[in-house]
Image (tube, rainbow, N blue to C red; front, side, top):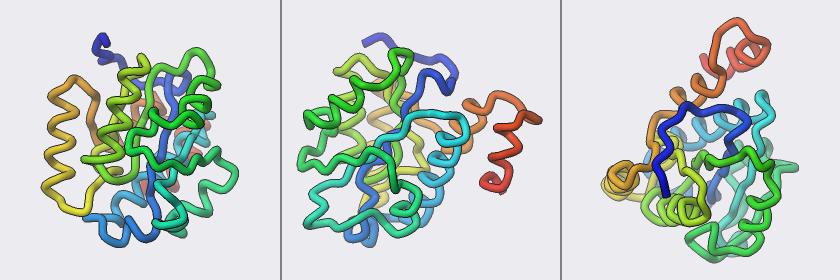
Length: 187
């Protein structure tokens, strides 16, 4: 897959929030940071009309989304899976295939960085999409595993950066209605 080093644009993105569930997040390093930044990405996506998909990993065992995200993600297409690679799940593939044809970038947030985020990023690449990983909107139970996963994804040519970088790339300029709508979330 060719590397994609273009700036993020709303027309080219889909936000995928992966498995931020109560039982899992209770054990995740810096879970509050992950939830806060996933929420920021969600608000940006809603403001800019970027499609949002969400997944749960075996919801029966790991429970619902953490309460902060459960409220935000009400009404968002959410797919329960047992696969670590979201793209190995037929319902996820169908949801991605139904996205506008301009979407070529999957912006990833959630848990765990070294398992479901990494494998879903690999699945996105195999599907011809460019994964963009919001480094401070993902984590793992162990800090070291998250760091190694982010390093590996970056070494493989995937885009890895902070949430705020993604948000400001998507907003493109100050003073717009979208920028003003996002200001309360950026403070």
